[in-house]
Image 1 (tube, one colour):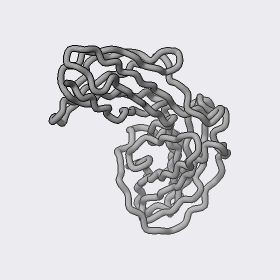
Image 2 (cartoon, one colour):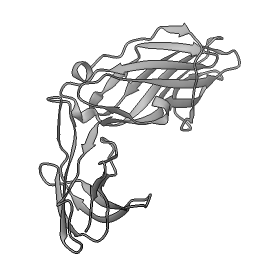
Image 3 (cartoon, helix red, strand yellow):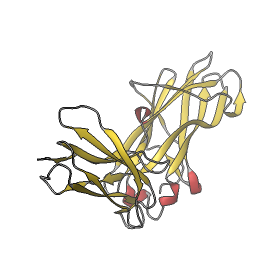
Length: 247
């Protein structure tokens, strides 16, 4: 992955959706400079697969009586994971850093860095004041996931058994393939034909290959799906619904 480097600040006009910054995060401080808001990826977790480049931005807003001169914005995570910005633009008191993560270039053999990440920011004010804040913002850096389902037989007679199989898998940055996510709780859910809301029928765990298999009794027409709630390292994912005609 790319090593942390200093960032050149350019002037530009940017749109921003901001989140509140945790209090008392300053690790270095001089004068009245303070970070007030941080947004990572528009408030969403950063999810990376096995091939596509993931582009996202991190915006930091600060305050100082003299105004903000520039910022350096870096990202740090588990197992010494770190990324520096490709570019940073500032407008007023807000600077936005752009990142582009190529899994095959930046993430080889680095599954351990998935999880909770933090924003480190150095802010320079126009009058020489500054603030350096580790963990000024937080987000999840996650391995992309997939979930499948198959309900059979189709059609089925009312009162007979339906077997619902599926597999939960996630991106592996060792070989850039998707591997089964083992020993994870997954909900089997049903959507009755004509309804708009899935209901949970049962919860089961994936086996040693990420596979799921269970049986239910056919009663009415509807859609079956598997729903995974996600973990710190892996996002939530639902399979598409598989319709079963009950006759």
